[in-house]
Image (cartoon, rainbow, N blue to C red; front, side, top):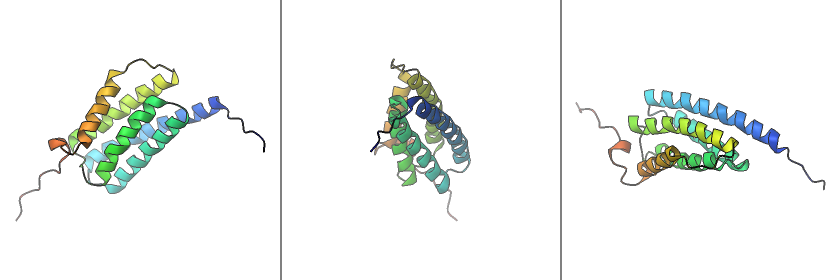
Length: 147
């Protein structure tokens, strides 16, 4: 069997294009989720986008992007399984993650392994939201008065 040679530059360029499209779509989806926090299809689509980003980033060794996407995947899974709800705070954290992912994408592309405190703080915030005692941030919105 012939050895397959991979053109890493082409693969990286394809990944970068795909990642930018995914992040743009996530931003649009999160704004829509803010308007309709119970939209199941939107949640599933966001989960798939983050899952794809995580896997593709790992393939091209963009570890900063892959690591944060892994954490976001967990948060989105909690939303999909109704263990958390898409409150304003949760959606704000997810929207912030798009900005942080863009910066991590830039850093990974430049092989910049310097500390990036914003990414660390965001991972901690995501972990706190996913913790069993997430508190008011992830709880279901209060029900309206019953008639």
